Amino acid sequence: MKTPTAVYIGFIGKIPIAGMALANIHAMLGLREIGYRVHYVERQNLPNDCYDPRTNEMTSDPSAALACIGQILPRYGFGARDFSFIDTKNQCHGSGWPELRRTLEQADFVMDMGTGTWFDELGLCPRRAFVDVDPMFTQTDMLRPGSLKALAVEHFDTVFTEGMRVGQPDCLVPLAGRRWIPSRPAIATSIWSADTAGLGGPLTALMNYSSGKAVTHDGRVFGYKDRAFSPFMTLPSRTSWACHLALGGLAPRDQLKDAGWKVESALGATLTIDTYQQFVARSAADLGIAKHAYVESRCGWFSDRSTCFLAAGRPVLHQDTGLRDLYPTGEGLLLFSTLDEVVEGLRAIELDYARHARAARAIAEECFEASKVMRKMLNDAGWV
Image (cartoon, rainbow, N blue to C red; front, side):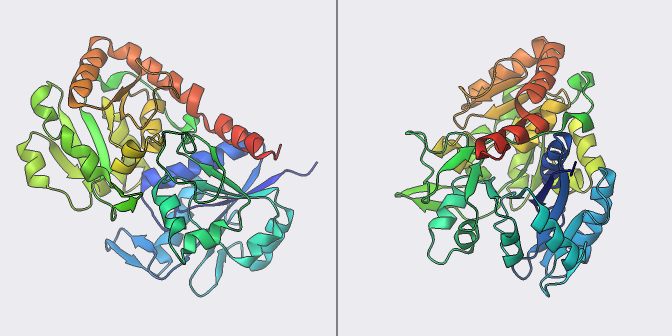
């Protein structure tokens, strides 16, 4: 019997940051666990859309992206012919165009993980799904006249969103003319070992402080993590926990250090999958700061980074984006909206760390396990 094939479009090479790469790998492993052969696709949709960590610059040169893909995919059992990378000259690296076309003709579906990629050969497969991983920013982008993302997403009959509450009456994310199917971020717990050794470690937050321009919708401004984090600047003075920030982007580093935060480079923590997993392992708990837009819109977004902490048996304090009715909370996963709630959550975790650590891993397995998440997506799409 022929093995079903999934074509998965991601951003492992173009954004070669370990946490971002793993968001793709987790979903791909989930698809493989439920029986699919996965062919990975990436395309340079615009000039200078590849980040090169060696130079800390955006570039059209695909060499760093190809090197990253060549290192990461084999680590998880994907072969040299299991990927296609299309550069700005329309050269198809990896599989080559003939093999990619054959794969698309035989594929059961194409799934684009938020990249907004379209090229005509994707039309060889009639089942196509787009996954919104950045609610509010995706939809407002789609509403802009001449939006390239809107033009790409028009080719996808099925659209998912990791904003689990998009479409609910009190959610402020516009629908942009589509019916969005809610979906959770996926974590392949098999590649994460869980233990309770993190009690002596710090509370950590890993984030890009300000990664773009705020957007305005219906007269309201929706911003990034800089806006969401500011109420929690003084946390180190309110707790005995060591508080560490791994920061990317423009940020008031001196002000944060003066407030008691130990500040390190996000790039150093996420340069490789090994350094990223070590960063998680040496943390006692995760402080999950969400983008201001996610909080203000009540879209129900949950951090794929926080799922890694859960899988590693690290309790998570996650900023509430409308999550209270979506996941089990109180043990292993604690929600907060105010600084006082963060302080109270840290006290609760400290009182019985081992219990919270066990609960964290259980939540990862129950709510975010990649095979469960991907199977539900395919069921919700009506494809199985």
